[in-house]
Amino acid sequence: MKVIVDASNVAHFGKKKDANPLLSNIENALKALKELGYEPVVVADASLRHEIDDKETFNQLIAEGKVHQVPSGTTADHFILKYAEDEDAKILSNDVFREFFDEFHDINSRRIPYDIKEGKVIIGKSSQPKKVKNILQKICNQILSEFEKKNMDAFKLKKGKKISGIAIAKEAIDRITKSKEEGLEPKLESVFLKIPLFDKVMNMVEEAEKTSDFIIFVLVHPKDYRDAVKNAGNIAVTVGDRLKLEHAPLVAVRNDLFIKPGTFELNILYSDEVEEESSYNVNITINDHDYSFVKKNSRNIASTVASRIGTWKFPIVSVKPSMLMEKPGQFDIILEKGGEN
Image (cartoon, rainbow, N blue to C red; front, side, top):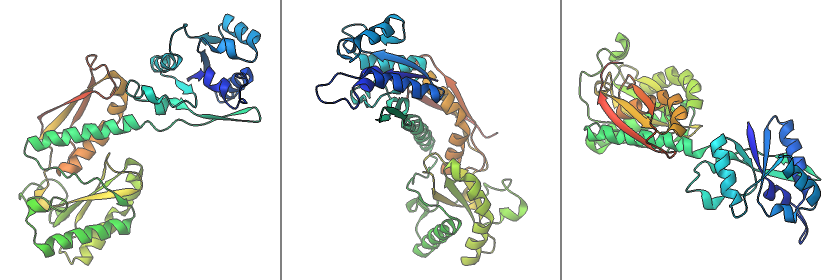
């Protein structure tokens, strides 16, 4: 992978007051990056050649094409950010480029911080790409809003609790108990249960499971999915025994893009309330920049939507790019009649 070296930022690192920027910093940064397998590209602003401590060597590097100098009068920061975006490259710099956040949304995930100790350049790590993670949540929010326009309620709680098998069981017991004791009308208890509809789950599960009073959707981050699945059977038995239910509830673990790693949330519904299939499938049109990432996560989007609207089978989620959507973060959602997966 290419790494654009912000030459001015690197050269100025650690220099003494009123001293010149250090060419050795740049040379040591190149060495460190190459040792890590990166392909470094040095970009300097026009003024650096007049300030650097070893002007002769630096000018020779420019002449040999080993250092790229931005045109005079050009903002080096913008040039570096645009170059990195065009080349899908990282940037070695301790400059956070805050004034360019509105134009370049993925600066934090591109920028690699560094430190220099006794002449050795220590390469840091980029931040996780918050923008692309958030775009999945934005897409899911929009999809759920579209379902609500179709008069389908959606579970919206997003504040997760620390995950463990016993924590999930206790939370389910508490919520079911509270809803029964308070006798709340389903419309008023959106956090707990939705309106029972009857006869919506007849072909959904095996015969023994059809008689479950409740279905407990356990919403977890994809990283926690496997561990949560291992506990599903014990959770069902624990909840059924404690509440003295005739039949243990069905526990369905779902990947959910709103949930943080290490936490969980529950959407608990009456069994006869759960839809067997999604009434609508989802078409996502998105910009080229985010297309691959969203396409890769389309099943997690489907899982999130299914568990939030209370359907057993996932809606079909199709993702296609559009050249008309030029900026990262742009997307459009259209629901179409579904019912078959």
